[in-house]
Structure formats: structure tokens, C-alpha cells
Amino acid sequence: MKTHSRRDFLIQAALVSMGVMLFPYCKKSSKEKDSDEEIIVVGARIAGLAAAGMLTFNGYKVTVLEADNRYGGRIKTVDIDGYKADFGASWIHGIHGNPLYDLANKNGLITKPTYYDPSYIFDTDGEEVTDEEWKTIEKLLGQLTDLAYTNPDTSLQHLLDLMEPGMNLSDKLYRAFFGAVRSEIEIPYAVDAPDLAAKALTTNDSFPGRDVIFPNGMQELTGILAKGLNIRYNTFVTKISYTGDKISVFTKNPQDIDPKRSCIACHGGTDASLLEHDGVFTSDRVIMALPLAMLKNNNVIFEPPLPSGKQDAINSLGIGTMNKVFLKFGENFWSEDGYFFEYLKDDHSKIIEFFSPAPTGTKNVIVAVLAGQHARSIEKMGDDQVLNIVKNDLKGMFGSGISTPVAMKKTSWHTNPYSLGSYPHLKPGTDLSACDVIAAPLGNKVFFAGDATSRKYMATAHGAYLSGIAAADSIMKSV
Image 1 (spheres, one colour):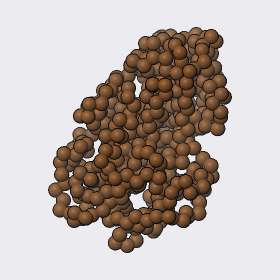
Image 2 (cartoon, rainbow, N blue to C red):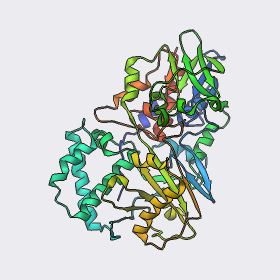
Image 3 (cartoon, rainbow, N blue to C red):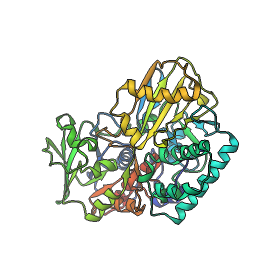
Image 4 (cartoon, rainbow, N blue to C red):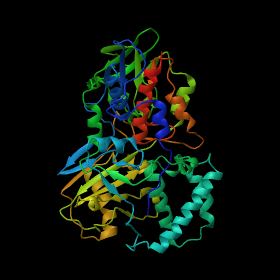
């Protein structure tokens, strides 16, 4: 079983048009500029780090403002009893032409290939889905994609409603099909079927070639990009005023901010009152490299306000949630050759996908992956309740005698005030052209970067990285 990938555009033409090279940026800009030109980058995520690194190398005075106490955003590696757990982004999707893979190779980082076979799917009675049964499911997934081409402006749920009456499947195959929809589409997009545009099934955001992971954690990548940069941590940007010759960036210490002001999960995304600032920076240009959810949540006030078209584009895209539960056991009780495992349910919205790094060399660890409302729900639960939910699936697949884990950690990206979710997706009726509108600069002053600004690679780490390169390049080419 292979996880659904989304868009498949090559990067080479983009890199040529930018006229830059990959980090460590060994080609200088040909633009004549004042040596004292100052740039502020808002956000020390991969997009902001890429932009700041490129501009710093080319002689600009760059300050990165980051609300959190670390760099990387959703690229976050945590040690769990010796296992380097990637709480957010984990994979490089496709190695051929992928700038992040080139970056890893040039800096001697270790990567390990991962595959999607063998994977094991278990029905409610513990019986496995056979290879022949999976072939039937693959045909149905193909029909689902065909429907997406003829019904692009509707939702994934609408496509399923069109298909369901004519499927004529056994109960097991019915559950297997909707389980495949969950694992192949909803979980990768981090969103439930009613909220995902059908046209998302017709796109692909990966590069050619196999996928790889980082045994020592993906944070090694952001560590390379952050090296040598001037990053101000614990600096929450509250307002950007770009009316004068200089841009004013107002800030506040996040410890002094009511969590309800910064968290969409708490106050429901309604407009909040303007925060008083306790600091201000001035610059010639600004790159906004915040996650889309913070722009949707109006965490930053713009003066003058954003153009209505840009605000509409920001609001048009959805934000999904993917959370993980990491479990380390005293023994490996699942098939060590398997990468992915899934326990089917009648309510497919509650299906969990399990990933095992055992084939890549890490034993006794299994990772539960949840998406959409199911992922958001576990953020409100205690560890014991979450463990029971995950163990019930493991028992259904491997028997009731499984042991208690020696360590467990869960992620909470929806209520993280500096992420407010995982990554963007197309909602029904929306279009990738929204990415172009979000990316468009405000005059020659405020530029935008991040995975929501990448039409070709939206919602990917490599898309975010390239967007940072593009924003920096725009500044270097501007007059």
C-alpha cells in the first residue's frame, strides 16, 4: 500500500530562474545595494531560515524574530529514550531534484530510505486484508481519482457519496476501502473528507524517487540553516507598519500574552484586540514567514491593512491537523519488516495509521498518526486516555497480550500557539491560485514566504524552503 502523494513538479527551472544555488549559497547577488540595508524576517521556520541565510550571505543585515524559544517550527526533534522522534515533518518526499535532499547530502547528514510495502491492514476481527483484496481497493481509489477530475470543485466527501451506492462490497472490503481513503488521502492531507477539495486528488507535491527519513532527526536540517543567523527568540510580532520609508515591526514577549489572544483553538479565530507592544524594530524590508494559521488568526496586525484580495486568499485555504503518538516498548511485537499498519473501523474517521521505523534500524518504537478532528480531540485528553485509544488498535492487530510502553509522547499542534495546526490544504471551491496571491509582496516592502505561498509544493517542507529562497531572491532583484 502506498501513501497518496499530491503534486509532481520539478524544481530545476525554478532554481535557474532564481539565479541562486542551494545552501550555503555560494553565488552572490549581482544587484548593487547599500551595504547597510536591513531586513527583518518574521519566523524562524524553514522558510524564514532559508531566506535569512541567503540574504545574510549576500551582505544584508538580517534579524530573525521568532516567538518561540527555538528555531524550526514544525520541524522539531525530541529524544524519547534514545529514539529521535520527529514531532512534525519527518520525510523528504522524493530525492531526485529535491533541494532538501541535496542540502542533507552536501552537509553529510544520514538519511534512510522508507517504503510503503510491506504494509499490513487488519479488519475488525483481526483478519488481514489480502493482496488480492487490496487490488480491488486500488481500483476503487483509481475511480475516486477519476471522479475528482470531473468534479474538481466539490469535496472528497461528495466524491465518496457518489461512489458508495454502486460499490457493492462485502463488509470487510467496504471498511478496507474507507480505511484506504483515510490512510492514503485524509491522513496525508491532515484533514477530514468534508473539508478537503476534490481537486487535491489530482495534484502531486512530491519529487521523483524514494522517500527518506533522518535517523538523527529532521531538525539536523534546520540546524544547518540556522547556523550563524541573528535570531531573536521569545519575540512575538504584533504589528507591521509599512507606511513610511522604514518599516516598523512591533513586538511583545510571549510570556506577557494571554494564550487566548494567540491561540485559534482557544478563542475560535475571532478578531482579537490589538496587543500593546513592548519593543519595536525598524527595517528596510520585511519577510513574513509565519505559518498560514497565524495569518488567518490575525495574530499580526498590518498597517495599512492587508488588501482584501490577499486576506480573502489567506482565509480561503484550510489548516489541517496531524498529531502523532510515539510509543516505545520493551520488545518489538509487530512484524519488523512492516512500515505501516492499520486497524480498520466502521467509523473510518477514527482510523489510526501506525508507522514503524524498525525496517530503517530502530526497533521497539511504533508511531500512531492521527488527522483532522480525531487528531484535535486527543489534545484535550490525558495521557492515559490517549494510550488506551492507541493500545486498543494495537490489541486488535497483535492480540490482547501486548505490553505497556516504557515511554510515550504525543504532539499537540492544533493548540500550539505558534503553529495553530499542521499545514494548509485546499478547501472545497478553492484553488491553488490563492498561493500566488498570498505570496505577492506589499509594494517593495513586505514579502511573504511559507508553505502556503508555494503553488507547486504547498504544505511541504521543500515548498516552504523554496518559498524562502524565492522571497530573498525577490528582495535582491528589487530596486
